[in-house]
Amino acid sequence: MPIKLGAHHTSNLAKRVEKFFANQGLKKKVTPHVLRRSAAMNWLSKGMDVFHVSAMLGHEHISTTEHYLRSNLEDKEAELKRIGLNNDEFKPFKPNKGQDVFLESLMKKAHTKNIM
Image (cartoon, rainbow, N blue to C red; front, side, top):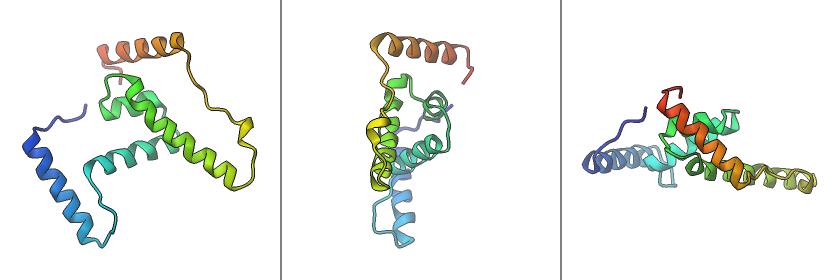
């Protein structure tokens, strides 16, 4: 279960993370959000299912986690295009409203039973 921090602790953590990576010579600003997003994208790219990623991030609704999936799919589509494959053959799955409601109900049951 993710740890909830107060605003004071969160801003202090953000400053420490930014300072650490700045001292490493990175030009891009690295924040706790960037680390969190990178972890989620890494888990998805390694094959972790969206339900587990959602639980790891502490998202109450699967729809909150879906934007990571969309970004991951966009990266994959760009790579297919780069190597010359016709990505018209690779359409991402888009749940209809009924499927989305069903997936949400599974997540709620898993959270109430502490399965995830």
